Figure 1 (spheres, each protein chain N blue to C red):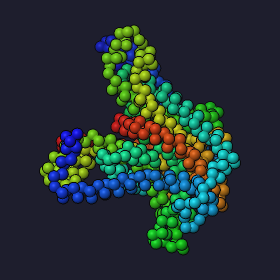
Figure 2 (figure 1 turned 45 degrees about the vertical axis):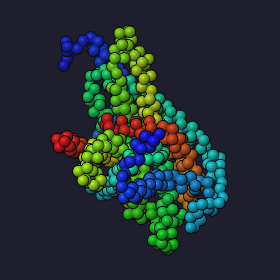
Figure 3 (figure 1 turned 90 degrees about the vertical axis):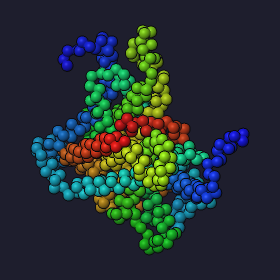
Figure 4 (figure 1 turned 120 degrees about the vertical axis):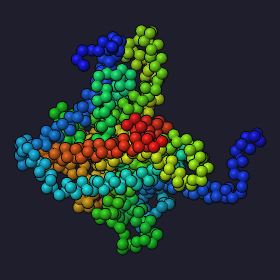
Length: 309
Length: 295
């Protein structure tokens, strides 16, 4: 590997060198913005660096990590994040699949509906959070107004959506599902369009119902797209920040505080830099672990799918 | 003529399937309507709120079809606050980030598709990995860099960050476009004596203009919408971007939230994106799909 292989001709060698120059700026920017902060967190996580130490780093080994083990609020945010992620992504998959199936059929005005269907994805999350906070406003919000008109609540029993723990959690899930379902339906739609129609025709000739066809043809053939969308969304939902920060600020009483909010508060508000770094490391490691497991699962089901066909 | 209509008609020879077909059609139509309402209603409600008089906004029960409309909230937004500044700020940051990202990402993508530099596999694996990184993991380390380099309240901090967070998708999408180009063209260019870089600029990039537009749109949208870095790196009020500036209106007064101006701010901040989606919906779908499939 140290000597250039004699099999590579000079033009190819020059190409490789040019290629390196072309790719270098991108690699430098990526290392600076992604690799450095993670590396810094691993290093800084070994120090106490907060108001108590006069914002000077004092080496404490694994002290921050021991503190995390006993930090009940961190694990609470972890559970909140996990619950938010799982429920949101599941709902998005189901609704996204429904939208994709509808958009996969030819009908008049499909182009317009498809444009409308990607709109939520393109809008700024921070602003959308304000839209949903307004919808879930306890006094003037449309959510309560609809329930009132349906007779499900009365003026005295109006729901304080963002003021109670479980309704606030429900509200952020609704907002997230609205915002990111389009992403999933676009991916699934692309997959649907690559499934040949004669498969369904043959299945119908064999006496299969559309419902059976969905489970026997659509889902297995769409599995790669489903898994990729799930992995993407899982990672994104796990790092959710702006939606919750703007909608509830983590409230009421920390009921909607997710890992991102807690890390941000430690780094920016409590100025507890060493501890924030350790939190970053723990979140990073847990996320990588989840991604590796997910990836192994994707590969296994992929090879299973190809083995079955 | 009769042939054409014949070819379309004779799908259902019996009357019974036709009736069930109309039932499915009705259900299908309802599903389409539901999708449209699901996607549009929250935005339309906010638009409506922004044009209502304040007393109509806080009327109980809610007024769905107001008879009086006002521009007051918009006037307030642009008079009391430098809101046009925020629009300009966001535009500047998003445009420069997009250009930088394409200028760095396209050559890198070409290199990875065609020139096979050393470590290509590692670079690609790294790119795939960082697409999954939550931004919160980067904020403390980046803030340190920003402070050391004195980049606080400097758009360079945002532009570099936005370039980086959009590079993975840009590189993945562009790489698949480059890989699809017929290679003969590049071989012919080489015979004509072009160097690799000349060939890239004069021949290959013009051919991939659609891909550049696609990835550029996605980068612009992501940069316009970004919140957490903009919130952290830019503290000077007149330099803020739209999402941050709009979000802080709601936090400014604890007792009486200015619902009208908040709604107006949301509308102003989303209009450019609605226009982008209307014009470029095909490119957006294409880019998202290509990016995820490559990932």
